[in-house]
Image (cartoon, rainbow, N blue to C red; front, side, top):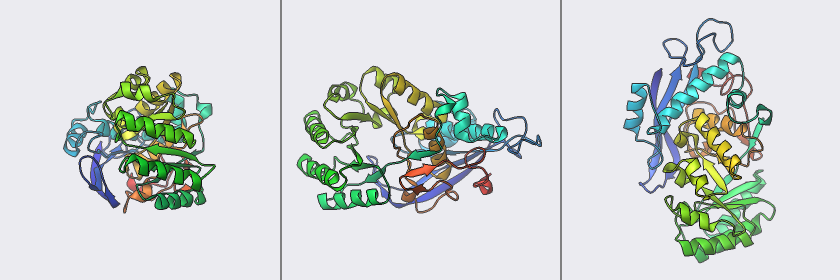
Length: 354
């Protein structure tokens, strides 16, 4: 296994509970090929000609509050055995090995994941719908941003809420609906509300026909999240999955929708297992990123493509980066991302990175 450290500047700083993030730092993980560890892909190469082990790419890009630190990520990768305590490191290795296996088999990564994973391979899609995200702003700014997203071809739009007073956010939700009468609208509170405010806002979202409200209460409050269900609008869980397993959240009846981040969950395999658990419990799954580089973003796209009838996912995050690890072979067009043709992550589109 070979590692290459990188730092990708964001187009605008990302505000988090731990302070602003101006760059995404992590490690490009390579397995197989000259001097690499191919994991399970030991016979043949990406062309199937038997000249050597297939090479595979992964990405380990930790995010404070969601995964281990950058130093702990590096230590886990150096140790060669990342586990659940270092999900970003495990993601990097898991994705690289999965990519190598798919390249060896001459299959797209999504097809390989489906064949080996919990879903029927017949459910793999060639294109994944994605949602636009609208940040905090006035009602007018929110309406304009939602309208622009719909004009660009997005059928689903997520509106960030929770930074303003409830009355102001209610007006913003109404403005969003007025701007997009036929779009699937979602709201994301990032755990900002107390119980009373959450009830008030969910009722408002239900009246406006929103599909679900993401993380209306703090991450630890699973019982509170469970009590909010059944108000006419779905309850989505995101931050809660940083401290609870998907099965713990589902056992608590705390979610209608699980928002799954492969980087935070520890890899494509664990993400698909969580999506299967959601479906088995009568919940839904949406795949999103932690504002990753193109390698992890493509990995998340393949995971989403392997989930049958997947809802619009939060994968349209490439534009948040001012620079990237390489070319993007799956740009957003008309509200969806098309899975690249060819074996592995992207066929030959990322050959310069191997």
